[in-house]
Image (cartoon, rainbow, N blue to C red):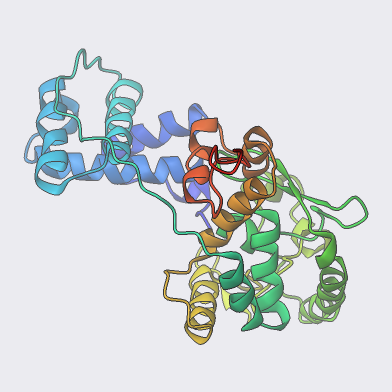
Length: 327
Protein backbone atom coordinates (compact mmCIF):
# COMPACT_ATOMS: atom_id res chain seq x y z
CA UNK A 1 0.00 0.00 0.00
CA UNK A 2 1.38 3.46 -0.84
CA UNK A 3 2.54 5.74 1.99
CA UNK A 4 0.52 8.80 2.86
CA UNK A 5 1.21 11.69 0.54
CA UNK A 6 2.06 14.12 3.35
CA UNK A 7 4.69 11.71 4.70
CA UNK A 8 6.35 11.06 1.33
CA UNK A 9 7.62 14.27 -0.20
CA UNK A 10 10.92 12.96 -1.55
CA UNK A 11 14.54 13.68 -0.65
CA UNK A 12 16.58 15.45 -3.33
CA UNK A 13 15.40 18.73 -4.83
CA UNK A 14 14.65 17.12 -8.21
CA UNK A 15 12.57 14.41 -6.51
CA UNK A 16 10.48 16.92 -4.60
CA UNK A 17 9.87 18.87 -7.82
CA UNK A 18 8.89 15.66 -9.61
CA UNK A 19 6.47 14.63 -6.86
CA UNK A 20 4.84 18.06 -6.85
CA UNK A 21 4.36 17.96 -10.62
CA UNK A 22 3.12 14.34 -10.62
CA UNK A 23 0.50 14.95 -7.96
CA UNK A 24 -0.58 18.26 -9.49
CA UNK A 25 -1.14 16.47 -12.82
CA UNK A 26 -3.01 13.60 -11.12
CA UNK A 27 -0.56 10.83 -12.00
CA UNK A 28 -1.24 7.45 -10.43
CA UNK A 29 0.81 6.39 -7.41
CA UNK A 30 2.53 3.63 -9.39
CA UNK A 31 3.40 6.04 -12.21
CA UNK A 32 4.88 8.45 -9.68
CA UNK A 33 6.95 5.65 -8.15
CA UNK A 34 8.17 4.52 -11.59
CA UNK A 35 9.13 8.07 -12.61
CA UNK A 36 11.02 8.53 -9.35
CA UNK A 37 12.94 5.33 -10.02
CA UNK A 38 13.98 6.46 -13.50
CA UNK A 39 14.86 9.89 -12.13
CA UNK A 40 17.21 8.27 -9.60
CA UNK A 41 18.92 6.25 -12.38
CA UNK A 42 19.33 9.37 -14.48
CA UNK A 43 20.73 11.29 -11.50
CA UNK A 44 23.36 8.58 -10.95
CA UNK A 45 24.23 8.65 -14.66
CA UNK A 46 24.76 12.43 -14.61
CA UNK A 47 26.66 12.58 -11.32
CA UNK A 48 28.44 14.70 -10.26
CA UNK A 49 26.40 17.06 -12.46
CA UNK A 50 22.95 18.09 -11.25
CA UNK A 51 19.74 16.99 -12.93
CA UNK A 52 18.81 20.65 -13.27
CA UNK A 53 21.60 20.92 -15.88
CA UNK A 54 20.37 17.96 -17.98
CA UNK A 55 20.00 18.48 -21.70
CA UNK A 56 18.57 16.53 -24.62
CA UNK A 57 22.03 15.16 -25.40
CA UNK A 58 22.28 13.65 -21.91
CA UNK A 59 18.99 11.77 -22.40
CA UNK A 60 20.09 10.68 -25.88
CA UNK A 61 23.35 9.37 -24.42
CA UNK A 62 21.71 7.27 -21.71
CA UNK A 63 18.85 5.70 -23.68
CA UNK A 64 21.09 3.81 -26.17
CA UNK A 65 23.02 2.35 -23.24
CA UNK A 66 19.84 0.55 -22.20
CA UNK A 67 19.03 -0.58 -25.76
CA UNK A 68 22.49 -1.53 -27.01
CA UNK A 69 24.23 -2.97 -23.94
CA UNK A 70 21.19 -4.30 -22.03
CA UNK A 71 18.73 -5.06 -24.86
CA UNK A 72 16.05 -2.94 -23.24
CA UNK A 73 12.63 -3.46 -24.78
CA UNK A 74 10.88 -0.62 -26.63
CA UNK A 75 8.39 -0.42 -23.76
CA UNK A 76 11.20 0.08 -21.24
CA UNK A 77 12.80 2.75 -23.40
CA UNK A 78 9.49 4.53 -23.85
CA UNK A 79 8.83 4.43 -20.11
CA UNK A 80 12.27 5.88 -19.32
CA UNK A 81 11.91 8.60 -21.95
CA UNK A 82 8.46 9.60 -20.67
CA UNK A 83 9.76 9.75 -17.11
CA UNK A 84 12.73 11.95 -17.95
CA UNK A 85 10.77 14.30 -20.20
CA UNK A 86 8.14 14.69 -17.49
CA UNK A 87 10.79 15.28 -14.82
CA UNK A 88 12.73 17.88 -16.80
CA UNK A 89 9.82 19.69 -18.45
CA UNK A 90 7.09 19.47 -15.80
CA UNK A 91 9.21 19.15 -12.65
CA UNK A 92 12.24 21.31 -13.47
CA UNK A 93 10.41 23.54 -16.00
CA UNK A 94 13.04 23.25 -18.71
CA UNK A 95 12.53 22.48 -22.41
CA UNK A 96 14.59 19.58 -23.81
CA UNK A 97 14.05 20.05 -27.52
CA UNK A 98 14.58 17.17 -29.97
CA UNK A 99 16.12 13.95 -28.60
CA UNK A 100 18.03 11.87 -31.13
CA UNK A 101 18.73 8.30 -29.97
CA UNK A 102 18.74 4.70 -31.21
CA UNK A 103 15.50 2.93 -30.36
CA UNK A 104 15.35 -0.72 -29.28
CA UNK A 105 14.08 -3.20 -31.86
CA UNK A 106 10.35 -3.96 -31.47
CA UNK A 107 9.53 -7.33 -29.94
CA UNK A 108 6.41 -9.48 -29.98
CA UNK A 109 6.03 -12.01 -27.17
CA UNK A 110 3.46 -14.79 -27.20
CA UNK A 111 1.66 -15.41 -23.89
CA UNK A 112 1.77 -18.83 -22.26
CA UNK A 113 -1.74 -20.27 -22.46
CA UNK A 114 -2.89 -23.50 -20.82
CA UNK A 115 -5.07 -25.91 -22.73
CA UNK A 116 -8.57 -26.66 -21.45
CA UNK A 117 -7.40 -30.03 -20.15
CA UNK A 118 -4.44 -28.43 -18.34
CA UNK A 119 -6.81 -25.89 -16.80
CA UNK A 120 -9.06 -28.66 -15.49
CA UNK A 121 -6.10 -30.54 -14.01
CA UNK A 122 -4.76 -27.38 -12.39
CA UNK A 123 -8.09 -26.51 -10.73
CA UNK A 124 -8.57 -30.13 -9.61
CA UNK A 125 -5.41 -29.80 -7.48
CA UNK A 126 -6.92 -26.86 -5.56
CA UNK A 127 -9.74 -26.74 -3.05
CA UNK A 128 -11.53 -24.32 -0.77
CA UNK A 129 -10.67 -20.63 -0.98
CA UNK A 130 -7.59 -21.31 -3.10
CA UNK A 131 -9.68 -22.96 -5.80
CA UNK A 132 -12.29 -20.18 -5.64
CA UNK A 133 -9.57 -17.57 -6.19
CA UNK A 134 -8.15 -19.43 -9.20
CA UNK A 135 -11.60 -20.02 -10.68
CA UNK A 136 -12.55 -16.36 -10.26
CA UNK A 137 -9.28 -15.18 -11.87
CA UNK A 138 -9.94 -17.54 -14.80
CA UNK A 139 -13.71 -17.11 -15.02
CA UNK A 140 -13.71 -13.30 -14.82
CA UNK A 141 -10.37 -12.58 -16.50
CA UNK A 142 -9.01 -10.69 -13.49
CA UNK A 143 -5.49 -9.36 -13.11
CA UNK A 144 -3.68 -10.54 -9.98
CA UNK A 145 -4.10 -7.32 -7.99
CA UNK A 146 -7.72 -6.98 -9.14
CA UNK A 147 -8.35 -10.40 -7.59
CA UNK A 148 -6.46 -9.84 -4.34
CA UNK A 149 -7.84 -6.35 -3.72
CA UNK A 150 -11.43 -7.31 -4.45
CA UNK A 151 -13.78 -5.97 -1.78
CA UNK A 152 -17.26 -7.08 -0.79
CA UNK A 153 -19.37 -4.27 -2.23
CA UNK A 154 -18.26 -4.60 -5.92
CA UNK A 155 -19.64 -8.16 -5.99
CA UNK A 156 -23.13 -8.13 -7.49
CA UNK A 157 -24.24 -11.75 -7.22
CA UNK A 158 -27.82 -10.94 -8.20
CA UNK A 159 -26.81 -9.40 -11.55
CA UNK A 160 -23.90 -11.77 -12.13
CA UNK A 161 -21.15 -9.17 -12.40
CA UNK A 162 -18.43 -7.49 -10.40
CA UNK A 163 -16.87 -4.05 -10.67
CA UNK A 164 -13.12 -3.56 -10.54
CA UNK A 165 -12.57 -0.20 -8.85
CA UNK A 166 -9.34 1.66 -9.52
CA UNK A 167 -7.90 -1.02 -11.81
CA UNK A 168 -5.09 -0.52 -14.30
CA UNK A 169 -5.01 3.13 -15.33
CA UNK A 170 -7.08 3.92 -12.21
CA UNK A 171 -10.25 3.02 -14.13
CA UNK A 172 -13.40 1.21 -13.02
CA UNK A 173 -14.40 -1.73 -15.18
CA UNK A 174 -17.28 -4.23 -15.13
CA UNK A 175 -16.32 -7.90 -15.26
CA UNK A 176 -18.48 -10.93 -15.97
CA UNK A 177 -19.09 -13.09 -12.89
CA UNK A 178 -19.39 -16.84 -13.54
CA UNK A 179 -22.83 -18.07 -12.48
CA UNK A 180 -21.28 -21.38 -11.39
CA UNK A 181 -19.25 -19.54 -8.72
CA UNK A 182 -22.24 -17.89 -7.08
CA UNK A 183 -22.77 -20.58 -4.36
CA UNK A 184 -19.03 -20.63 -3.52
CA UNK A 185 -18.91 -16.82 -3.33
CA UNK A 186 -21.97 -16.78 -1.06
CA UNK A 187 -20.20 -19.25 1.25
CA UNK A 188 -17.03 -17.15 1.15
CA UNK A 189 -18.95 -14.01 2.14
CA UNK A 190 -20.61 -15.93 4.96
CA UNK A 191 -17.17 -17.02 6.23
CA UNK A 192 -16.04 -13.39 6.27
CA UNK A 193 -18.67 -12.28 8.81
CA UNK A 194 -17.20 -14.03 11.89
CA UNK A 195 -13.72 -12.81 10.92
CA UNK A 196 -15.01 -9.27 10.51
CA UNK A 197 -16.81 -9.40 13.86
CA UNK A 198 -13.69 -10.76 15.59
CA UNK A 199 -11.59 -7.90 14.20
CA UNK A 200 -14.15 -5.38 15.44
CA UNK A 201 -14.25 -7.06 18.85
CA UNK A 202 -10.44 -6.63 19.09
CA UNK A 203 -10.82 -2.96 18.05
CA UNK A 204 -8.45 -3.44 15.14
CA UNK A 205 -8.16 -0.59 12.63
CA UNK A 206 -10.29 -1.03 9.55
CA UNK A 207 -8.88 -2.31 6.27
CA UNK A 208 -6.71 -0.05 4.13
CA UNK A 209 -8.59 2.57 2.10
CA UNK A 210 -7.53 4.92 -0.71
CA UNK A 211 -6.23 8.11 0.86
CA UNK A 212 -9.04 10.32 -0.43
CA UNK A 213 -11.76 8.03 0.94
CA UNK A 214 -9.92 7.60 4.24
CA UNK A 215 -9.83 11.38 4.67
CA UNK A 216 -13.55 11.74 3.86
CA UNK A 217 -14.77 8.75 5.89
CA UNK A 218 -12.06 7.50 8.29
CA UNK A 219 -14.34 4.75 9.67
CA UNK A 220 -15.27 3.29 6.27
CA UNK A 221 -12.61 0.60 6.65
CA UNK A 222 -14.52 -0.76 9.64
CA UNK A 223 -17.67 -1.34 7.57
CA UNK A 224 -18.50 -4.75 6.16
CA UNK A 225 -18.86 -3.66 2.54
CA UNK A 226 -15.24 -2.49 2.39
CA UNK A 227 -13.72 -5.75 3.66
CA UNK A 228 -11.47 -7.86 1.47
CA UNK A 229 -13.15 -10.85 -0.19
CA UNK A 230 -9.91 -12.81 0.22
CA UNK A 231 -8.30 -11.58 3.46
CA UNK A 232 -5.09 -12.94 4.95
CA UNK A 233 -5.47 -15.44 7.76
CA UNK A 234 -3.19 -13.50 10.09
CA UNK A 235 -3.29 -9.86 11.09
CA UNK A 236 -0.09 -8.09 10.02
CA UNK A 237 1.68 -4.83 10.78
CA UNK A 238 0.83 -2.03 8.39
CA UNK A 239 4.21 -0.71 7.13
CA UNK A 240 2.77 2.80 6.72
CA UNK A 241 0.97 3.32 10.04
CA UNK A 242 2.70 0.67 12.17
CA UNK A 243 -0.68 -0.62 13.41
CA UNK A 244 -2.00 -4.19 13.20
CA UNK A 245 -4.75 -4.66 10.63
CA UNK A 246 -6.23 -7.18 8.21
CA UNK A 247 -4.62 -7.20 4.75
CA UNK A 248 -5.55 -9.13 1.59
CA UNK A 249 -3.75 -12.32 0.63
CA UNK A 250 -0.16 -11.57 -0.42
CA UNK A 251 0.49 -11.84 -4.15
CA UNK A 252 3.50 -14.15 -3.76
CA UNK A 253 1.41 -16.48 -1.60
CA UNK A 254 -1.14 -17.00 -4.36
CA UNK A 255 1.61 -17.38 -6.95
CA UNK A 256 3.22 -20.17 -4.91
CA UNK A 257 -0.16 -21.86 -4.52
CA UNK A 258 -0.58 -22.03 -8.29
CA UNK A 259 2.97 -23.24 -8.80
CA UNK A 260 2.49 -26.12 -6.35
CA UNK A 261 -0.80 -27.05 -8.02
CA UNK A 262 0.86 -27.01 -11.44
CA UNK A 263 3.59 -29.36 -10.21
CA UNK A 264 1.01 -31.71 -8.71
CA UNK A 265 -0.97 -31.64 -11.98
CA UNK A 266 2.24 -32.41 -13.91
CA UNK A 267 1.92 -29.32 -16.10
CA UNK A 268 5.22 -28.54 -17.80
CA UNK A 269 4.33 -24.99 -18.83
CA UNK A 270 4.98 -21.97 -16.63
CA UNK A 271 1.79 -21.29 -14.63
CA UNK A 272 1.12 -17.81 -13.25
CA UNK A 273 -2.01 -15.93 -12.10
CA UNK A 274 -1.85 -13.84 -15.27
CA UNK A 275 -1.85 -17.06 -17.28
CA UNK A 276 -5.41 -17.66 -16.06
CA UNK A 277 -6.38 -14.31 -17.56
CA UNK A 278 -4.79 -15.37 -20.85
CA UNK A 279 -6.85 -18.57 -20.74
CA UNK A 280 -10.02 -16.51 -20.15
CA UNK A 281 -9.35 -14.51 -23.33
CA UNK A 282 -8.48 -17.46 -25.57
CA UNK A 283 -11.40 -19.52 -24.25
CA UNK A 284 -13.85 -16.76 -25.20
CA UNK A 285 -12.35 -16.40 -28.67
CA UNK A 286 -12.43 -20.17 -29.22
CA UNK A 287 -16.12 -20.13 -28.24
CA UNK A 288 -16.90 -17.57 -30.94
CA UNK A 289 -16.93 -14.32 -28.92
CA UNK A 290 -15.89 -11.40 -31.13
CA UNK A 291 -12.57 -9.77 -30.38
CA UNK A 292 -14.07 -6.35 -29.56
CA UNK A 293 -16.15 -7.90 -26.78
CA UNK A 294 -13.07 -9.67 -25.41
CA UNK A 295 -11.19 -6.37 -25.55
CA UNK A 296 -13.91 -4.69 -23.46
CA UNK A 297 -13.99 -7.54 -20.92
CA UNK A 298 -10.21 -7.49 -20.51
CA UNK A 299 -10.13 -3.70 -20.21
CA UNK A 300 -7.58 -3.22 -23.00
CA UNK A 301 -7.23 0.35 -24.28
CA UNK A 302 -6.41 -0.85 -27.79
CA UNK A 303 -7.64 -3.86 -29.73
CA UNK A 304 -4.03 -4.40 -30.84
CA UNK A 305 -3.28 -5.68 -27.34
CA UNK A 306 -6.13 -8.20 -27.60
CA UNK A 307 -5.08 -9.35 -31.07
CA UNK A 308 -2.19 -11.34 -29.58
CA UNK A 309 -4.64 -14.03 -28.39
CA UNK A 310 -5.85 -15.40 -31.75
CA UNK A 311 -2.22 -16.49 -32.34
CA UNK A 312 -2.25 -18.84 -29.32
CA UNK A 313 -5.76 -20.30 -29.63
CA UNK A 314 -6.21 -24.06 -29.82
CA UNK A 315 -8.19 -23.44 -33.01
CA UNK A 316 -6.87 -20.16 -34.47
CA UNK A 317 -8.85 -18.09 -36.91
CA UNK A 318 -11.87 -17.11 -34.80
CA UNK A 319 -13.93 -20.03 -36.04
CA UNK A 320 -12.97 -19.76 -39.73
CA UNK A 321 -13.13 -23.11 -41.56
CA UNK A 322 -10.04 -24.29 -43.43
CA UNK A 323 -10.57 -24.23 -47.23
CA UNK A 324 -9.49 -27.87 -47.27
CA UNK A 325 -12.48 -28.80 -45.07
CA UNK A 326 -14.85 -26.74 -47.25
CA UNK A 327 -14.19 -28.77 -50.43
